[in-house]
Image 1 (spheres, rainbow, N blue to C red):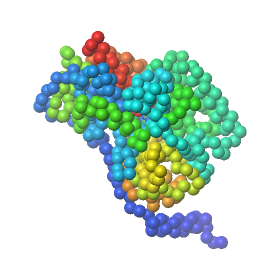
Image 2: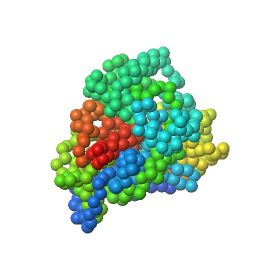
Image 3: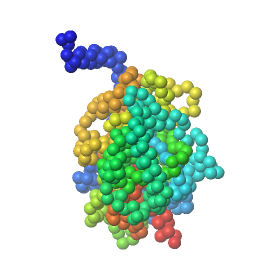
Image 4: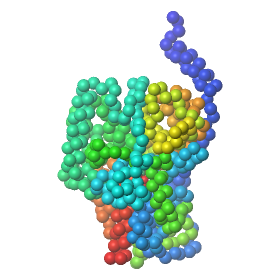
Amino acid sequence: MKLGRRKFLGLGSAALVGLSLKTERKVEGSFVNDSFQMGHRLRDRVSFPAPKRTEKVPVVIVGGGIAGLSAAWRLRKRGFTDFVLLEMNAQPGGNARWGENEITAYPWAAHYVPVPGPRAEYVRELFEDLGVLKNGQWEERYLAFSPQERLFLFGRWQEGIEPAIGLTPKDRDQFQRLEDLFGEFRKSGAFTVPVELGRSSKFQDLDRISFSDWLRQRGFDSRLLNWYMNYACRDDYGALASGTSAWAGIHYFSSRESEEKGPLTWPEGNGWITRRLLERVGENIRTGQMVHRITETRRGASVFAGDTEFQAEFVIFAAPTFLAPYLLENFPRLHDFVYSPWLTANLTLDRYPESRGAEPSWDTVFLESPALGYVDAMHQSLRTHVDRTVWTFYWALAEGAPAENRQLLLEKDWAYWKEAVLHELQRVHSDIRQCVSRMDIMRMGHAMIRPAVGSIFSEQRLRMSRLNGRMLFANSDLSAISIFEEAQYHGVKAAQKVLKRLHG
Ligand SMILES: Cc1cc2nc3c(=O)[nH]c(=O)nc-3n(C[C@H](O)[C@H](O)[C@H](O)COP(=O)(O)OP(=O)(O)OC[C@H]3O[C@@H](n4cnc5c(N)ncnc54)[C@H](O)[C@@H]3O)c2cc1C
């Protein structure tokens, strides 16, 4: 009777620690793909050695993410091969990079593409090229297998991520009312993918308030509904609903048909698309080439990377746009370009944790977690028996200011983040520490553009995407929404402008 509650808990947890230490495995791993040391040389404006050689080339593409690779794909598809793509990292792909171990290939960031709607013409064309879309049919093995998504809430599992357990009549009513509103926005035709094809000033007011304010103003106060809206913003934008433009929040739910199939996914996520693009444009790519300066010339621009000055007629700038003021002289200050910091972790599992009655799914999410959950790389495997796998764990550092979170990403060591990830997983998979043998972690300070209030209709952003000169911008951040389709759209569009100028 004398044992107070705290003391009792203290003893209990000591006993548990003892227990877990005995059975815990050593987890190997490290930070991987760090590129901030290179990026900070640009930020700190260190001086780079003078070039030793010059190379004349009509077109230079800066950045080998999906935007840059898509520009290259369009140029080569139109028979134009006289260009180089300069990528600062050893591996191209940007946010669509992948890794591979003895078990499977796995994504480092982007892992799926929703089945493209009719307006995403370039994406459909690409998928026809890659054999994903054949005679109007989506290749079955690339559509996410069932069960696709599961959510852990109130001590149990449910299928799907939208909360369906523990809803009060008020919650249900609010979910229905919001779905109806999204349906109306969908019907308006103004919320499209790509964004540029539908965006209309009729809904500009929605870009002047945050998504959370918009929800509050309409009386949406259900806790579960607000969790779900925040989850969506964290997942696609790396931001909370309070840091997201209402226009972008609505776009997430209103830009696609609700009854669509899919999504399209591969073990290595969008790395599969990167691989296919590399097969087509690889010859033009120079990796390990960080562009550190671009100067305008009479006939185009000089692009400086490594020991070379590339003298180009056209430059497609597909690296993140926030770098432009660091590379181009007298480039105006950029407003409305805020980026969300993220980390991803790839965990090698030597066995699956106990399932506690739920079938493993492609995507697993936990209610009220600061992280976003994980994706199973073996989910699309056609093997009949799978015992080992790789999970990609996603964490957008959405709470607090991006600059502070970038600092945190750098300050804390690998062991800290490893523990943070395992701690989150352990809440749901109590035996996770006995399953994981390796965890590699990737830190991305400026992972993706954040569609903050005012960014969708930002004058500066609209002006930059309309440029028609010798310097063209193409990163997905021009849409203020970072998804595959936007990156591909801007890349292809920039390449078409160049081809038009070159060939009329
Ligand atoms: C964790 C995470 C998960 C995501 N998941 C998805 C998803 O599932 N589906 C989806 O559709 N989208 C997802 N995205 C969004 C993703 O950003 C886009 O889909 C797309 O891959 C962005 O491509 P991009 O070419 O515009 O930019 P980036 O991928 O950022 O590419 C820019 C490239 O430029 C290079 N570069 C930068 N500076 C220089 C320089 N000075 N010189 C030379 N090269 C330089 C970079 O190394 C990089 O390769 C995710 C993003 C993140 C961060």
